[in-house]
Length: 493
Image (cartoon, one colour):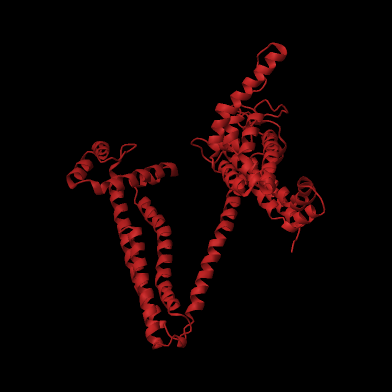
């Protein structure tokens, strides 16, 4: 029986338990609901929870623990010659056993007997069943696969039996405890409150897990490469050095950090004026009809995948800037050589700025419209024009929120990857010319984790050091944005 079918059965038992609990509460009330502490539905929900939560917890624990026990038992059944091999070879052998276990139910007894006599027939037989075997299977693997299937079936059967029995027992106990004085509402609401606390804790626990995983791997990297060389190094060359050398490359963060901040600065120079002016227009000048059309269209940009922006930069913006620069250079000097490369800081910054426009405009628009109408009317009533009201009343009142929105947008720009890969290249260098390519921290994280790698070398572990650094930068920007908003926020009645 599959896990989905088991959950369906448990839900059916729970529904029956709810109905029986409600009926029992009604029968105990004798037609007078005032004699009950809680409404009948709470009694039904109480019995349903008692019937459903224990088996659900059992299923979660069983599905987590049982695979480890089964896999460990199968590995212990391997011959001693296999156990003497490395862990990687044992894992490969177990992978073969798992694949064989999937195909064994498809084989007839004659096919299985012929395979045991001649293991070379295994690949053709499995290929005919639609299963691919990467290497020749050993005879012991068939026995281990059969053992694996048998243990899995026994584990699943035991889970189904125990879970259904526990659900029925829970429903029986719940029905026995139903009484007019039972505080069913308090118990049900306590369970709901606990589930809400668990749901709200998931984000916190996820963040803690992400930070802990990056931090642990970063400490492994800094045990090999000194932190001073990483944070203050000016050369990024994470290749292995020649044979016999003690160094494993150079991991200077400064070129990557410079490229990240440079491209982010260009993007903000594009996004802030356009987004802020668009927000002012939609909040103060646009008619309701115009606002209803323009705002959704502008926010469509926020839903476009960043890889599409990268294609746009690579195919359209980059060649356009290159051709324009070649034309301008030709008119000025007669030499039609482009001084803007197709992949450059300017290309990535412009396209990233276009991507950030809806973030700036939407956040700023919400902040501007939150300014009380009385401030506008008071300024206009004193004789100020609309533009003077915006400059001297509305924007100063909304400035803390706008600054916070811009800082959060900057953290979004710093974390961008795909646009930079396609529009700015992967060259890690320090330079001030916006017409030349540079790269960012996120691009190098992708590069260092691309391919079939093991997390044992500095070339791979450096990605975690880059990730924790970028995390700290964006976290600092978000904390500072919240500080600005809370400290300078205006309080209106």
